[in-house]
Length: 69
Image 1 (cartoon, rainbow, N blue to C red):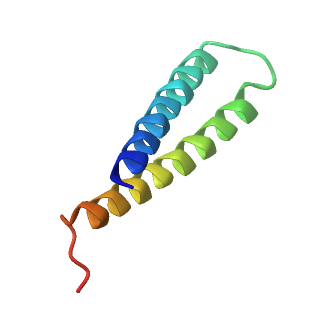
Image 2 (image 1 turned 120 degrees about the vertical axis):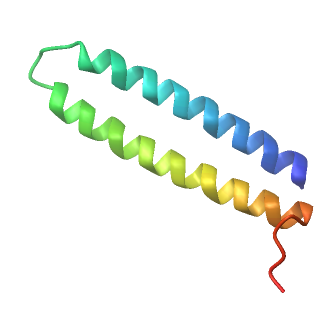
Image 3 (image 1 turned 120 degrees about the horizontal axis):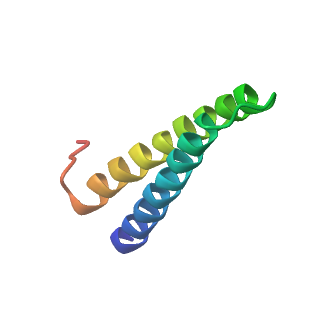
């Protein structure tokens, strides 16, 4: 279980890096759709960050670093 959560966290971090690079590239564009894409990328980044935090918390619970009781 811990291995699956760790792999999921690594995959989500990779996705976060890709979204971040896409957002940086989008900043260099000057077309009409730039503000809309920027907003969509920001939303995607926030969602992926929430998933990463949830995966890391679950991983902490599974390995025993976080004791609930």
